[in-house]
Image (cartoon, rainbow, N blue to C red):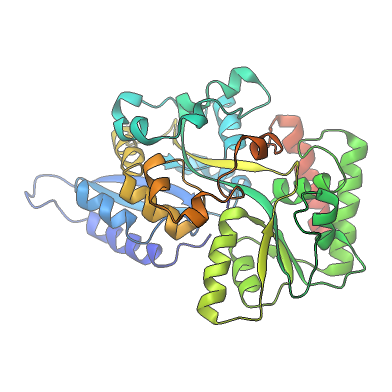
Length: 369
């Protein structure tokens, strides 16, 4: 779902250096634990707190921007990775991740929201039913539109995808807009705007979505990115952008920090859009399985989960952490959808053919003038 690591990089670098030192007893080196996560997707003190609780580990923390940029780097060797559910399904099929030992995850068992046991993660029931054998939910979100209501007017309460995404795809608007530099999100928004499934494999529909994205790029020159879009929106450089629901909260915080009172930023969720959950998994080439189990379970400590939820802005699957949130957040159906909203959304499905075709489309869009 939805990120630069701020001070975490500096602290993690310091920890790497410390890891080369002997433990106080002088008998052995610390065990290295390599985490691969999205940027801006962990609270600043989480790694330090983990190492304080588990002094036998030295954490190396690395980041990626999208599932697609993470995927080709898996051979580099990580102990914990945090991809989205559709990529998890792909990694299960391709034997890139290994089963979790749930006996080593008592905190996860205690605090994971039971709804995640019943959600459909993949088109195939066989794969969907295996997901929680291999992965633990970390954060989740929905994909919608943020817009400055002082510059753009939308019908009150609309969930119509054509009305909502028209803010981004109306080539006559002259608006400054942002698009995620991520093929599934951007192609998905185009398909949703056109009234199609965000998992469409119909060639005519995909051609229509590609042409729409190319026309948008030519006429509006959208800002492409991930983390940079949050700052551009908060600075008033963009009138609207597609966004993960969690990033909307971060944008509001940054607008307040900048004192940009002239921005009335709102978030709206189109029917048929995406909801996604990022999940903690262990690659098959992991070198520190026990450390990975300790890290995953640690991340479900209610205080740790709450701090990460507050810092990141995304929705937590931890029931105790959710109870700590301001009701204005925990009762917002855009951040914590009810069953009706969940049923109106789709997760991304994956297959070799779908990934190949969507990659071709996205490369064509990015290469267009």
